[in-house]
Amino acid sequence: MQPHPIQFVDLTVRDLARSVDFYRTHLDLVPLETTEPGQAWLSAGPGVLRLTEVGAAGVDSGWSPDDTSRGFRHVGFKVGDLDERAARLDDAGVRFHKRPKDVPGGVHITFFFDPDGALLEFVQGQLQYDRVLDQALVDAEHARPTPATPRFDHVAITVADPARAVQLYRDELGFGVAGQLVRADDPRGFEITYLHAGDSVLELFAYGIDTTAGPDTTQPGLLGFGSIGLTDDDPAGLTSRLVTAGAAAVGPDRVVDADGLVVSLQADR
Image (cartoon, rainbow, N blue to C red; front, side):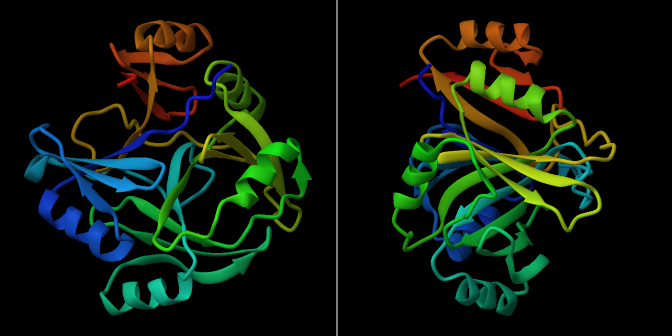
């Protein structure tokens, strides 16, 4: 099956100009032309951030910092100069979730929030998997050059049943299962499974303890993360297949998976 890379990430913002300035200043993202009212599209390498303004009507998403809360966790960007960028974020008063640190897998990371509370990650270094499940996918990932500016890399979600999630995204959307990290030091039984589609990655967080329901991101007007976006030559047909495979339709071109991740579907251009 032809893989369906993540083409765009939807973010809902209260003040469009403020958010565009944030992403241009701190992530060097490049605005693209769009005729959609109240939207800004920002190029992030292999993906696009679509910002949609809701103004004063926007409400907090209810996102929890507890990673056992299902659904969206963060959007990740590859960088080659993490510490320098983190220092500039700090100087600008950007709110951090986790300061720069080295973590298992051989990468250097930091987490911070955008103006509307969406959690973002910078990642530096080549991830070393505890379990390699598809060497070709890992080799392709490691062959990508270190970006000069932040490059969209992944969206991370927490799932209740990783086998069920893998089946949906592998069998219906063509994502390949590259490998896993196993956090043996975590008493919660934390594992991350990495699904690759082209240059984009979906990270599945899973635990050996019960997870909790995350916020319902299908509600209109919620600030922060909204959906991942995919394209297909037959989005209606793909919607039907995803629903048959266990997702729920939340509109003619959107579905939500069993863990609360919204997927927007558009026709190929």
